Length: 415
Image (cartoon, rainbow, N blue to C red):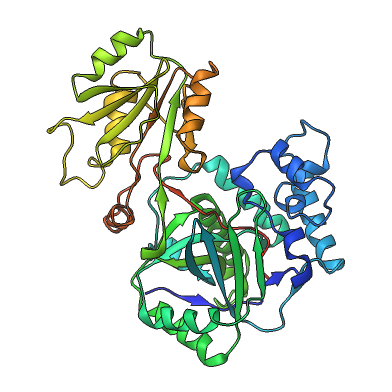
């Protein structure tokens, strides 16, 4: 059963939250972070993307860059841009996108739950990315950014959240870049804190929705601290890491699409002919075509859109991995035809989150940067949970959750 605890968040004063908050570190590059931070010395990018404080081109993984993150974290606290709450409590975080709101509980999850599989994952992680985040956690002695979990729907928690969100929030702002609204409430009543802890204790599992590398890094640093502490008791703050947990039914997974640099030596016509072995191929013309169901794909090639529908017998509905459209496309198109075997390492394929729209696929092909684009129908939360519950792993770049969590609203210190 899931173990969580309240915590004393380090967070911005109400008047400064819009100055401090940022997008997550992994959805933008150094140049974009530098541009978004601009002249704002309070921007969290100075902590999560500290290379922006160095000359352009500085290696973001250089030791001095990590040290700068810790220096800036200390500076933010000294200047009062980040202040630690006096009491251990939970927080409610609401995000509104396109008129739909999802309500998450900000908690501290248990490192041992990650290690023993109560916190379930559906993606593999890369050691280099794990180590990058581990260095960031170590040097700051804090989880600067939360991870994103899903949990089974719970009527008791829904009622508690509804009670708090009927009141004025602590934070309430709309992000200028995307127009999404973000609000935060503080759950400080002792009885309500006990209720949240008790309800999570009834849950057999929590599911990582987004942030597999951050989850792994946070848990591994926590275990590392425990192993290195001869007086380890088990109740130290480093035994926990920060997560925002949403009811599964409230979450939206959007499409995660592919663009390829070449056709593996094939002409356009040869590529289309090869597709006909396993797909019904239909030209849709110049107007953007979006996949309309599972096993239906959209291909953009030479200024035209095509509908590709996987033929019966090319996938197994009883195989939780084999039935996924990412598996079908990876095996039958990227692998068999284009010779792209490892999506995690190949330089011939790139991935585009559906939040950018199919127009972005068209733009990257029309620009000459890419040769063709493939759009997929999004995975469902049920598919994700089924795969995690059976101990299976999804292919790389399968799920894209939107909206992304804003960073800087709450931070968790490990000591």
